[in-house]
Length: 70
Image (cartoon, rainbow, N blue to C red):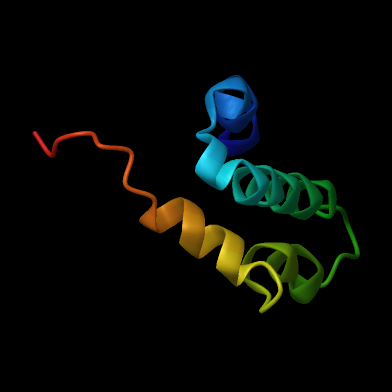
């Protein structure tokens, strides 16, 4: 579901976080592709929570798109 929503949003990703947005979508896709019998928890979790991807997730999480909170 997250990957599908992300794909719909891909074209409108702000230029300031476009690279990070794409990295996050790739991490979600890789993680989902590893949900197979015999996969280890680390196989599924690492693409989403590994040290290498954290900066991209932080950039997307902390991006201020100018939307109001209400």
